[in-house]
Length: 128
Image 1 (cartoon, helix red, strand yellow):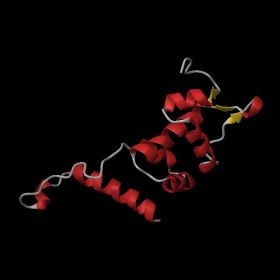
Image 2 (image 1 turned 135 degrees about the vertical axis):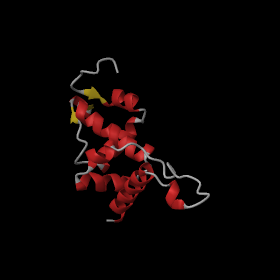
Image 3 (image 1 turned 90 degrees about the horizontal axis):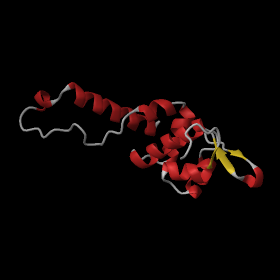
């Protein structure tokens, strides 16, 4: 994108910036109607504000990087935990898991517990 300070950015530039097709952005508009509302100009051309682009970036991260479903992202948006979820770093399912050769209690550290708690919170959110 040429000017990062533009107030309204056309859909084709947003698609390039996020590396997703424009039709995907239009689909996300329908799926996440409350969160993504572009401004439409002459000829129904879509223009996005910077804060909307950041929401799209977060939605892309949740869908593509974290492997969440559209329903899961909708639930996060509905619960109001969207900003908290998007600030959490991507944690692979097996991150921090160590091969246990002796007692499992000795090989667990606080990082392993934090990862397990994070994964349990995400699982609970999906089950609620």
